[in-house]
Figure 1 (cartoon, rainbow, N blue to C red):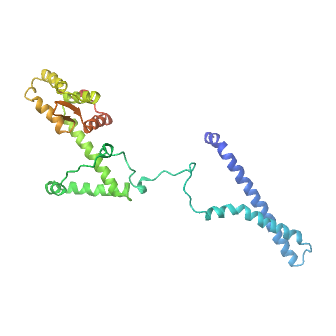
Figure 2 (cartoon, rainbow, N blue to C red; figure 1 turned 90 degrees about the vertical axis):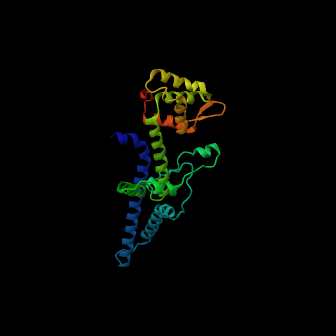
Length: 263
């Protein structure tokens, strides 16, 4: 009942139209049938006045033709581009392929992609096993199911998302709390002096004497440079990188609590 109450106003005109069209079909069909029977009876000399029945039959044929004319025209009409009010069905990702994602960093910066990867060396030194073979086969099956028309796009997105997530997870498990705090400050302030970043190291060195100063400031800073989180300029100014910002976004997306990290 709730559904009818909600949609009745939209359905009522359509129902009225269908009922009226059905009645007209019924009346015209009945009249046509009556005319045909009358002509048959006239042919067998059962009746003498046939002119009225012929007229009724012709009028019935005209009515039936008019009622069905739009259907034939619609079937013959070529497909047209949808207008502003056209309803376009949602694409099925299984048949439409991978939907384009967000812009790349290179395109946003107006730069050409810089790729330095030796695939031959990677596969020559990689570990192979029945487990890796099983994984390869499973990925092919998933690609065929998820994006049969554009498997290459599926592989690219799968690797792109998975590789970055793996790198961020590895950073999360190895980074110290003091480095995270320094990274958060860089994210909020932008470029700062080296001494501002070193203040986070000095605070940790006082609290965790078992680790510091064996773990030097240069090593502490170099870790973040090696993980591509920060960049150090010749002027001894420090800035967070795009990758560093993405790492912090990933932590929020994954629900990581940076407050639990020690050192």
